[in-house]
Amino acid sequence: MAKIGIYGSSFDPITNVHLWTASTIAHRCKLDKVIFLPCSSKRRDKQLHNTDEHRWNMLNLAIKNNPKFIADNYEMNKEAWEVFTYYTMNHFKSTFQDDEVYFIMGADLLEDIADGKWKYGDQLVSENKFIVMARDGIDMLKTISRSPLLRNNDNGTRFHLIDKGLAMEISSTYIREEFAKGGEPRYLLPEECYAYIKKHNLYQQKENED
Image 1: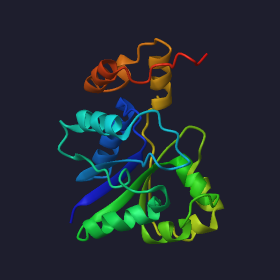
Image 2: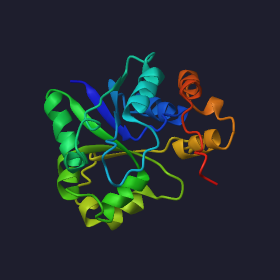
Image 3: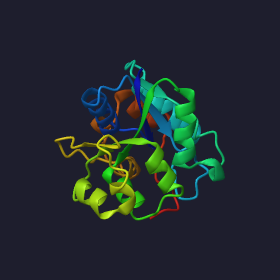
């Protein structure tokens, strides 16, 4: 039985922190695979800054040398109304029926689930296992204890809480802003992705913007 982590994000662009986080989790949780899952560009709650093609190409460039890392375009190919994490996890559990599948998320998303902001949140929590990454300022244990949904499904294996031990929170937003304003974020993302962005003039500020 393999252990597989599902790591969803916009990856717009993928950063070295994404890769470091995935590698840390794979090592500590003894995962056999981490599946990088770019979100759908059709979701109304996501404002993406690049095409699916560019995001997908950069993701594959970034992970190509790690045999544990796999890119999957399942959500990319879905319409907005079909994209819910509950459905996504059902898909991957069906695909990997003989394996143990975990949903990887940040503590901020755990808070959102606790606050009832996720559709099918009850079913998602009761039927799945989670690897939760620490975020500055969020007490993961308190988040679980204050939520009836989370605490009543906390059987000791439902939530694997990971404190990365190093505050590395450089975001894709920061990198996009650096490119747009003539900054130099070269060493915050994989070299191949940096070169790709430069080649295709991605994340450049539009002429009509201040």
